[in-house]
Each structure stands twice: as structure tokens, then as C-alpha cells.
Length: 344
Image (tube, rainbow, N blue to C red; front, side, top):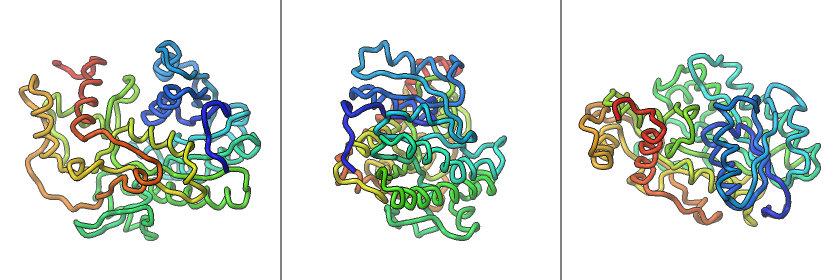
């Protein structure tokens, strides 16, 4: 299919009120697109105010809120009507109140509804799926560099081992399996349907500025906790900026190189973005000297299962990236600006 440009028509973004989804919307509007921002509840100001504010910032494009629910077949029909591309970012993340089956269904089973709505629209040329490094990684040697040819293991133990107990095993297994299987299903569907290209963006550990209090979750919250002097469980990190992830999504629909089956890892800009908690702690001490006590954890070597870079995205999409210092600084500054760091 031909690449997409702003004058072709609207672009739909599912999960538009989420962290990555919101930045996808911003990236598109900034570059002149009319965006159908899809979410379950379009009337909750906590979740949508930051999106509607984009219409008042002098950006070239426009945001229109659209209702859509992953659990409701056909609910995206109106949202996708007339759209030339879909960015399917919406997905349940593993958490203490999300059941294992719900996580898997949100990634894998319910993508059927989204794909069918895109097909019925008859105008969609490119379907961009927000996958995850969870669909790629598996236990590997410390010097192993993951690429787009890798897939997470076929056995449950591989998924559990790869995440080293960071999340409840059942939910993380479901998330990894769901993301990987959804990618495969997406490519098969596009090949048979022949209505649109299917491309995946695969972010590593996402950080960067948050837009609203509702984005105070996942890894970016660790930066806030460290600013507040709180402990953070030691971990190995391959950090990517949420703004770079959004840029990759836009470049993915505009690319004349990408096609069905194309996968693009959005990983560390360079080796400085691959670090452990104590190294992040030292960076934050330098970046936020006004905070006397930066939290974290004492030095502890952990296995490296997440070494990856944006090599292919740079080569084929022309992606450029923020440095890890810019990303961490922007993350902390956004929390401070929103008044979410106690004692700041």
C-alpha cells in the first residue's frame, strides 16, 4: 500500500488517552493530521483534557474524540470511518487488578474487533500495531543484542524467566504471549485481507514527559519515586523516550519502505541508555541537583535480557532519538511541573 500523508485523511489512535497513545496523538497533530482519538470514556476530563488542549496550542492538525472499546465488537466502526491509517495502541497492561485472561484477551483475542473495523472502513491503508519488547526477549547471554528477528520463547518458563519476577508471572506470561501472538495474527490477517499493510512498533522500556496525572504509572513513576527519595527495586533498563516511540509510529505510516510484517524495535539510542538502577540514580543526582536525596537502590548486578537498539528504525524509517539524559530530565521535569513530586 502507498504511504500515508496528512492530506489523505484522518488517522485513528486507539488507547489515545494512555501514555504512548497521547504522545502518538500529539505527534500526529503536530505534523498536520486530523486524529480520531479513540477511548472507552470520552467524557472523563481526567483522561481527555490534555488531548482536547492540543486543539488550542497552534498545532497544525486537529483532535476529535471517538468512543471505542476493545471488549465491544463493532465499537470502532464509527471511529475508523474514513481513516487512512490506524495506530492500535490500546492494550491492558499487567497490574495487580488485571486478570491473566483479561490481559491476554486485550492483546490477542480482542484485536479481532479492531482489525475488522479497519477492514470495514474500506479506507485504511496502513495498520500500525504497538507491540512490546515482551514479544521479543527471552533469557539470553549478557552481550546478546535483540533484533526484529527475535521472538519470545514458546514455553511459559521462558516468559517468566525473562522478566525475573518483576511482575506477577501469570499476567506477564499472558502479556508476552498476547503481544507476540497478536503480531502474528495481524500479519496473517493483512496478507489474506489485502486491504492494508500491517506494521509493528516494538518499544523497550518507555520513559519521558507525562502529560497528565493519569500517566503517573509504569516505569516513569520510578523517576518520581527516586526524586522523592524512595527506594526503587534494582533492575536492568533499556530506556527509550516516549516521544521517540511516537515519532516512530508516525514514520511507520509515512514510510515507503515498511510493509506487512515489518517490525521496528525502538530501543536505546546508544549504550548510555542501557543501565542499572544505581547508574540511573547517579544520572539523576547530576540532572536534579536541587534534590538532596535521590532514591534508588545499592549497586546490584542483574542479568541483562533487554539489550536492544533502534538500528532498523534508524535505517528504514529515518528515526532520530533523544539522549537518555534528555529523556530522564524531561520525565522528572514533567512530574515537578504537574505538582506530583511531594516536597518539590
